[in-house]
Length: 299
Ligand SMILES: [Zn+2]
Image (cartoon, rainbow, N blue to C red; front, side, top):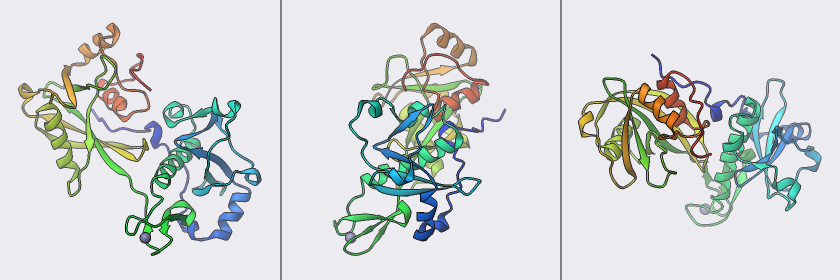
């Protein structure tokens, strides 16, 4: 059985990023004038059934990010600027968590790219070398220092998430203290400097659940710009299942699940699984062998 993850909700990007155009301001201005433009601010954008496209001529002042081209050569742009304090607008502001399952490939790709970029720009207003102000350059793909002209590129934080199985094909799920009651999920954590992904996978599972895993396989990835991560999914098989124990710090409880037990606990409400847009949910479903249509623990 393949556990490979396809069509993850936030990984459905469909635009050609056309990076060669980032240096061509005349071409970008021309694309913008007839392009698809939307506003983004602090993880939010206007969305009611569809993403709200602005008339480019009436777009607000703000940082302009070039997101790419669609198959017909139309340019896509985001403007990072605060929304007007207007109830008709604020009540229709949405986040990726809310639209991740319903937006089209074009919409979700543009929105994920724009939110991730805006999150980075908003928090990198000063040069890490000299402390002077930075400005957005190359269509939003870089920031430059006003004083020393050093270039600063967007960073993405790598996080691994692991579907832990045993020889009987049970899975091990853990519960974080900060989660709503009865919610359990896979083990996850950030890659540390100088660490390989494989070492990180083993370390996180050992730290949180006390077990050593081998037969590590890569399953897929999904951008997770809350505010700046990518989730890299792996699976591994436990060598010492009898040693499983929660670390008592981040993880307060562990449960082993067979498919039968998972069905039983979902039906009785004894188990709540992560939301539909999360890679964790999709990992559990890939192992389960189908979608899990039960109430979600959180959005
Ligand atoms: Zn500087």
